Length: 148
Image (cartoon, rainbow, N blue to C red; front, side, top):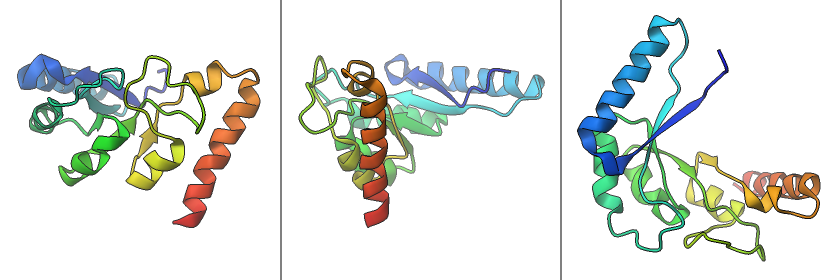
């Protein structure tokens, strides 16, 4: 009813948990006559500098039937090679403070690396002029699109 497009599950829960969650929400959406949201498995938080468990969690997501993963820009290539779509948080414009994020990328870097979707928060919400910041991010993304 609310137009949910994505639903995410944390891969740290393992294959069985992810699979059960994905199957249950798909069944519920179908029974309610709604399209299923895209199921994403969260691999490693971008606030965590240690991404050594990425491959394991990527495999958990793939084995559980997720449609894609939430991952840092640095992992996009590996996720795409595994057939997963990618939602990328930790997006900051050049010169922005990383805040608590350990693994960040600019919108241009993430799009150029093949991201399907970007999660953009404080770069806009904490900006002195959020409307202008949002417009600048859109322009950044448009420039990448125009060059590819």
